[in-house]
Image 1 (cartoon, rainbow, N blue to C red):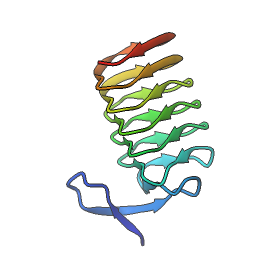
Image 2 (tube, rainbow, N blue to C red; image 1 turned 135 degrees about the vertical axis):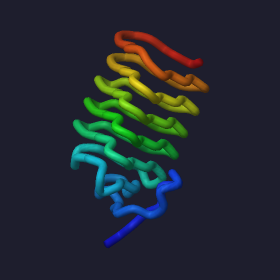
Image 3 (tube, rainbow, N blue to C red; image 1 turned 60 degrees about the vertical axis):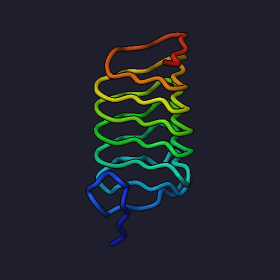
Image 4 (cartoon, one colour; image 1 turned 180 degrees about the vertical axis):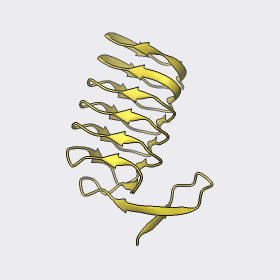
Length: 128
């Protein structure tokens, strides 16, 4: 059994490197074959990444978050809690989404943005 320490204080857990990109995925997470998980990205806990979504750079997706529908999470973005990123949305830079945040459509969240709740759809750019 292969294990990996995601640095979350839980120690090494059963995990594998995703076939499309080589990033680390905990065996408790769900990542489908159409997703791309870059070599330095991490997906763990019970996170979902599916439907052509991309997670790359040094980004982390964990908790019960859901990334799908061609959304992209990259650079040093941190997505957790019940957050959902979908419908081609982008989250990048040092952005943090936690709690219950929904990002969809042509929304770009980046810079030092920290979102804990709310729903953002349409054409919008959020930087802080």
